[in-house]
Length: 111
Image (cartoon, rainbow, N blue to C red):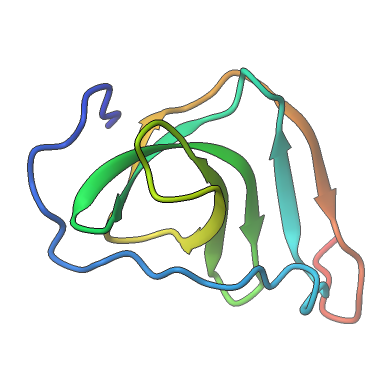
């Protein structure tokens, strides 16, 4: 389900902001990077309000975690941030095209 307009409900759980793990834990990480202007959009619950964000990259880890590296837009409080996919993060638009996908090789890689 896509949320073209700002959601009206408050999430039951606040989203989890995380540090980017891809650079620190590269073994088996798959990163999808999106083209500017064609990236997916998401609604992120930040500072007690929904804010629209452009998804710059999606990092998928072998342990099942998914982190979204986003650029908060409009009246949002600040720049590029990384959030764990889950409550407080809703897909607004699926996007059109990835510029690339990279599976980082390492001892735990699934390539």
